[in-house]
Length: 274
Ligand SMILES: Cc1cc2nc3c(=O)[nH]c(=O)nc-3n(C[C@H](O)[C@H](O)[C@H](O)COP(=O)(O)O)c2cc1C
Image (cartoon, rainbow, N blue to C red; front, side, top):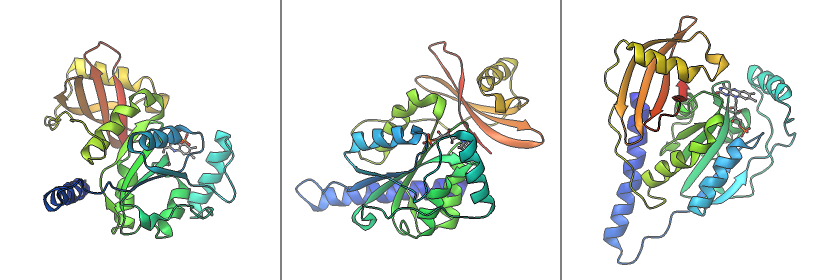
């Protein structure tokens, strides 16, 4: 994880260094970065996020299309993608219309399938099309965080410069614009100021109140039933309190990120990193 964070920071640093140099070297405005949003989406949740990024950046946008498209019936997608995953089958993509080499930054969007990027994105990455490029992975999911997919992308394709990343749960799409804006500001692609976020405090045993917040947040997602809060760290933000819980279910530990806003709204979890 440390390695990933360092690498992401290095990516950001390189991007901000490059723009600083340009500003010093040229009297006129540096050339705008060419941005492409590439995404895969079956039920259009990731598509919404892709389109938002496109609108905010004025990027070009393209959906990955399969030669043999998935059904949109949930059980059928699960069956086919499960078989492809088990058999390590890479579903064939139609050729991209965009020439990836023309772009400085590529936003790569996908639904999380079985904890990582959906199989068609595996096809794209395995083609080598993004090797050596600056990529910003983004995903939507039921509950899982973006981390596992980014770790996998980094270890399998080490020449890809992962500049930043973001994930949004499909039930929290109302919070998607704020998540995206934060990354776009970080990358210097839109104007704005991000709130500086403190580190989480050290993990310690949860208080009764924190356990209540944990239980309330996970109660909205039946697959989290039976998960216990083991420890927690927190930080205060302008909106409320963010918690990073370590949870445990069936002997497996996971990080669960929960926010409780000052508005008094029910606490909600934003990601589960297994
Ligand atoms: C085959 C399959 C596997 C999935 N696996 C996960 C998963 O491991 N973790 C998760 O949180 N959500 C999982 N989901 C839920 C999707 O990530 C989520 O619904 C996503 O927002 C769908 O994006 P789309 O509408 O762009 O296709 C899975 C969905 C499918 C169809």
